[in-house]
Image 1 (tube, rainbow, N blue to C red):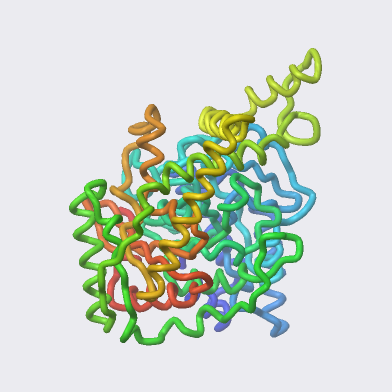
Image 2: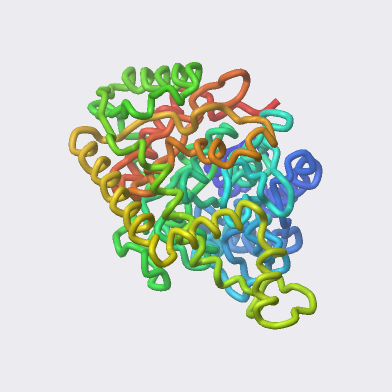
Length: 481
């Protein structure tokens, strides 16, 4: 059963060929037996999962089931879960047990889904390789000692290794799409404001967005049906009707206008990767789409703008972790200043400290206008590039990452090289538009991702395009050896 998609498991539960308890036990056994190789989970909630599975079976027997009732999945350990520790991959929150659920958690609970546990992640979602976690690095199932991408590397690795059929994830600068590409799964970052951020531990508030990770576009659509929607608890949540994202999956693509941003097919891109992406675009042409080159002239400024804005917002958001209210506290502080400084020095890892320092500097008196304000002006130009492009085309397509999964430790000593891993994903977060990564081939035995970018609130179109591609290719069905 572990090779079946969410849609297939839902149908099996509906037909009674398997119970949720049986299904849950199978996946828990796989996590117990296999995850030692990957370290994709921080916490496994076996007792709670089996109790929820029994409740789901009773719910199905009473005829009150949703498509998700009894289907196992996992949460990225950034979503608060009442009574279950939520660490954000950090020593700072190693023993934090929230007294409330994130809105995303509540919605899956109401849908009857069975959460198996919390997946590993880069500390406070800061990283592109899932090596900054306090709980150790995650290993990509596709290659010994290869990174799974980050920050949602635990979710991507767990789905790729068939430890769960689906997992929640978050994306601040590519943290769903890049690990999805490196692990050969399908991941979607919705429009900013489409999914509530309430109870999702903040990194950069104007960029963070909850999203989906599964093997197929159809499963991502089923997840988004649960997650999307207005939430009065989140001031950035958009009050807009939510369609049934599965309803338009099978619409033909004839007449779809695809734009290829010339800036994304540059010298930074591995040539074999480029060939895989162009081959994928040819499949779309066979399905009736038309292709033209477009330009995103300010794309080259995205990384510079992002690494001012994101650290600045991180500096503000992470100031709450001071040893006073919750989380880690240093031993025997001499005074209040000692409590603050030692708690933060001991509780945060190197990458988090680096970004706090950069962000605090960018926000400091005398530098705010020169850095943060200037970066926000550049952000507006990047957003306008996308608005202009979508006047001529329906979707944009590009590589998701500049190269396949690299070896653990290869880029740890050079933060700038690591930051360049997100060169094709960051502009999408700055603009707030939706995008997803779809498996589109292999280079040297490692997965390649095709990035599909849409206009605001066009998730249904992206999912339709991805689903139709997956009807004529089998990249998303390949298993790690």
